[in-house]
Picture 1: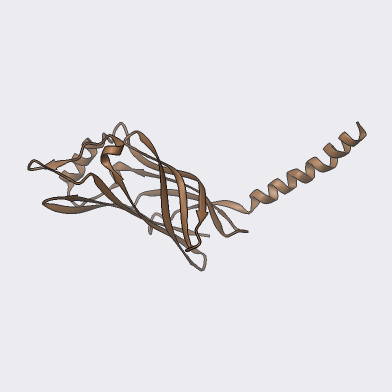
Picture 2 (picture 1 turned 30 degrees about the horizontal axis):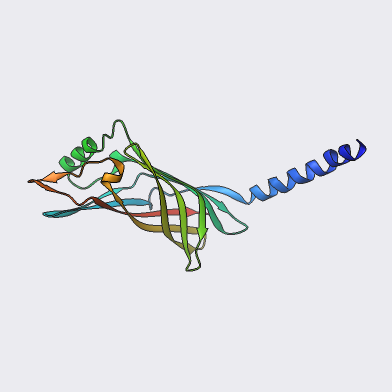
Length: 186
């Protein structure tokens, strides 16, 4: 009994202090909306277009000791994308059922640095009410107190139960190319 008190009285607070110290090195960084963007590119036999969102809600957990990104969460409003054509954007909101599914999200609790300097974020992408496991490979750039994470990836509309838009009887490509930049200050 005496040993139990000694362990609980001395070791318990010691272990708690180690856990607090281990997590104290990690803190949340929020992406700067002025310099962070997500761009989609779509292809149709008659033309190609981009839509850009500057309303990127992104947070990462960053460990000051290891200098590593530990996790990431991103949410973007579907209605925030601007293709410079209001008719096309309105139609996209209809096709994507933006009232029912207003956001695109990506969440990863596993961000691993690769030997080539890139980051591999394994997580879940939710789009149009469908959640799929997704791996994003990102490029990390450090400049003083600034950290920028860039990447490219493709998604297929049909994987997310989205019907490909068509114009003059021709469908757009199934693939949507996505490019992102998230900028943080440490």
